Image (tube, rainbow, N blue to C red; front, top):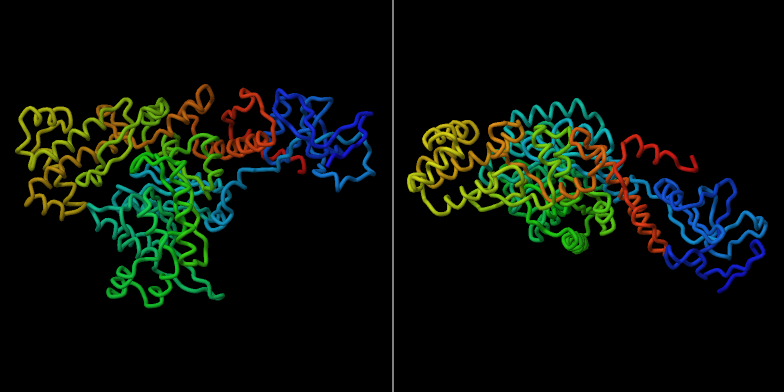
Length: 575
């Protein structure tokens, strides 16, 4: 239908391209009524209005040129036209964008479930790299961070629990529960510690299969509330990259494990029955090409696969509460955050970029090395905790020889059956450059460590020379991350720094801005830049889909200070 309306002595046909064609193929969608609003012309004015994501955006025609309508209202069809409105106050409308503040991104179900303002997780980085300070900062900002309990002794985990209980108050926080196939007793003790102190939220990571301690954490205390709904007080957000593992977390706990818990009187009959109606995890993070333990999966295919699996299993079991699926691995710029939400992620998770921030429980040296990395500066290396299994982690290779040396140790482990079989030239190299002491001294130190941490490993090593060799080699791998976190100057070349290619993308985006320097990187500032930038990037795409293309130089979303972001978010025209 063509609607003719006399405007400034001209006839305008609704639906006909009118604006400057250099900006795209545009069609009129209605009318903008100025009322108490104002008109601003020029591309910079359009950008300014577009970047005020808490406001609606109106692209209007002003004498044949694009302009931004600030405030006012729109009539998107001719059927609601109020003929009492003066002709002079109406201008042709060519695009409309609703407000999209960062807190609207992601799933409201996920945010309500975890008492969050933003659908944003700061992932757990082991050895306390995701520190108490990082967890506290995230919680205060309406996000959630998981303390990096992996690799830490129980007393340090307990100290962090007590610290966060005092500092976090009503803010959300969680702890990491990493799979420990080489030390299952530690996994059991960690779960017992979480239950003792009522830690209600854990990030389950690096699990190859479900374990009894993990299931015990999930089902302990499950009950029905006054309205008859099933309540799981202990919540799990599982981080997975494989379909077969995701399926287990999306399904109810296996009956064989429930029977074991019942037999040992660790759970009640009611807890066993109710747990058959809930998934193992409340939420699932599809882990793509991340730092640390990773399968280097491409995010663009992994997330849709996990979403489809979630839909299949939720339909199969007809759960009372929906399972949310988010994306982690590679989230490092406004565009990648926007892409994750556009793909259907209920939330996003960041990791590598947080390790270069001032709150990270690592050294200034590591932060500086990370801030100088590009996307190609990462590689895979044998993992300390799953060394014998051949499992690898993704680490920084620039400025360190850790990956090369770790790979050499694994090759020697696969080739020989004991330390004594290693050829003399190789032994001398290891003693001089890797351990900086002879094999016997290295073993004595290794034995002392495991006698405190896990005496069974020592007992086995004294009977099995190959296992003894594995423990010695693992001692180097384990200490390499500690040297990095402490900034041990004499061991820079041996630093093990977990990170993925996300750090390179972030550095490229931050180049030439205040975020280029690691001392200016605050985790909340970084997070809000990604979230705010994702809102802007999404609105730019919405505008593009309506036919209007901003110049590429204008589309760029530069890092902003936290105060500048808050000012933009607080500048809504209707406030």
